[in-house]
Length: 138
Image 1 (tube, rainbow, N blue to C red):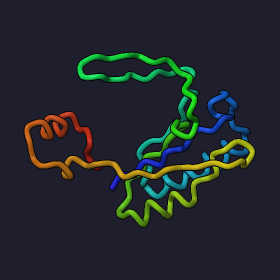
Image 2 (cartoon, one colour; image 1 turned 60 degrees about the vertical axis):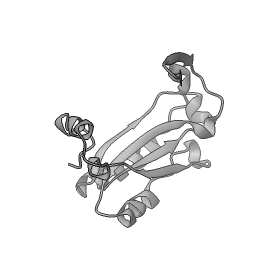
Image 3 (cartoon, rainbow, N blue to C red; image 1 turned 90 degrees about the vertical axis):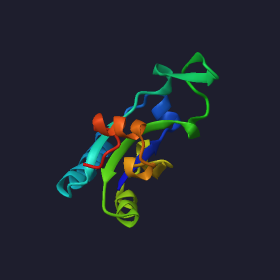
């Protein structure tokens, strides 16, 4: 089972405030534990939304909207992707995640399970994703 721990953005992360070395060290130690346990698939921080854009769809039309985006609570500052044996194991790892907010302020992560290709009904389209090695547990 794969889970994504989504680090929610804050006003500081959206303003480009970089975390102090102490927080980076805590994050490094936590991610080293994930590596030692053999459950880490990927992890990264994201640049502020001011450096990004959204594509809004209306039927076949596409409209590009440049950042920044005002609703900080809806934005993502980073993620950690893990593969574990159960929802409970993912929850235990999530509870150990260091507070991602600068200076220990109020922070939040959201944890979501990823779909696996086996969750979908067999089809030629699903097989195309298998052929690309996407959506597969390692």
